[in-house]
Every structure is written in C-alpha cells, then in structure tokens.
Image (cartoon, rainbow, N blue to C red; front, side, top):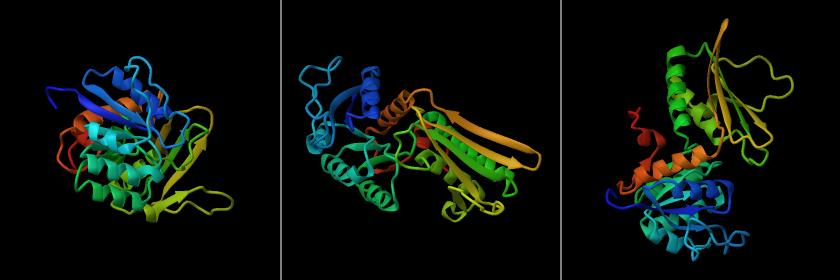
Length: 270
C-alpha cells in the first residue's frame, strides 16, 4: 500500500460516527473513499455524499460490492449487523476495523473465525489516548496490588444504548490483567440499596448518561489516605474517527489475524 492510497469502505455512513469518518477520510492524504453503506431501510440510503466526493457517490445498502472495492472496511454499526459484515469482508478479502460496542462472546467468536481469513482489528475505543490509558491502568493495577480499590466511572451522551461502555469494560479488563484475575468474577455494576461493604479486590463500574458527551472515563485507585486517578476526556468524536482511520491505514496489507490498537501504537505485547 506504500505507493497508493488505502481504499476505505465506511459502514454506518448515516450515523454520527459514519459522518465523522467520511469527513476524516477527506482530510487524510493516505486514504481514498471506496464507498459508504447503511442498513436497508435507513433514511440515508440513496443520499448523495456531496462535496468533496464526486456527485455520483451516494450511500448504498449492499455490503458485497463495497467489500470487493475496499482495502479496509471501517465498521461502527450495531452488533446485530456484525455477522453479515464479516461474511462480506471475508468474501471480498477486505480487512476490517470494528469499532462497534456492546459485543457479546458470540460476536467475538465470529471475529475469531473471520480473522483466520482476513486482518481484523477490533477495539472498544479507537482513541489513541484511551489505548495508552488502558496500558497505564494495567501497569498501575499490577504495581499497586489488591489492597487498592479500583472504581471506573464513565459519562456518555443520552443516546448511548449500552452500559457500562465498551471502553469502561476494556479498562476494567486491563486492570484485571494487571492483577491476574478474571474481570467477570470481580466486577461490581449498578450498586443500589443496602449493598454492604465493598468486596475487597472487586472492580466497580458506574455509568452516567446525559447531554451530548462523546465519552469521559476515569479509573480511580483508592488506597488508605490517598488516591490515584487516571482519566481521559473526549472533546470531539472526531478523535475516534481519526484513530479508526489510523488503524485502517496500518491494517491495510497485513496478514490474516486479529489485531488491537496497541499494535497500531507499536506497544509491546503483554
């Protein structure tokens, strides 16, 4: 891909992230737009993309041709659409960056299968800053030990449908890795009523929803008489678009396999 632009196919082009990705492609000289799609029946299907794209380019609803025309697909849609998207990517031999959140174990199994045929990068958050934050959280959890309580708080806009956010869960997973424990066994969510004392070694989550906040995350390590707070605040969802496209440019031409944002930053494997 060194001598030509990476052709990007945008899924979910009618949504907020899709629109941000389209704008970011136009600002990146490494990239070219292969096309854009939305789910059948969406009001954006058939809409012309407008400047700076050619007048003939519009949002369609057919995965197949887009996957064939693209070097990399960028997907910020919904979990229900993932299977069809991965099938199209495999058939078209297109790599894919998946930024969709709310994924369940069965979705990750689908991604694992697809990664045997194509290059797949899946991330709960495509921000480069959040990628580094997760590494810092893991290191802090490893160094501080279980006597420090870990609480993760996140704030998102009123339209977000899943909680805790995928990023909060990824930060929790990073903390759990640092401690060598299974997050599912030590996770506390949605405390309410007379809950009793905090369980030692557990990782707590709190979710706030309101307004137009693109996403704030805070990881607090609370010890006796002191606290360490590691956080990340988003000022614009454009950072997710730019991070996803940096990942797409990096992923183009890679061999089949499953990749993460750490690979894009060149962080050493753990």
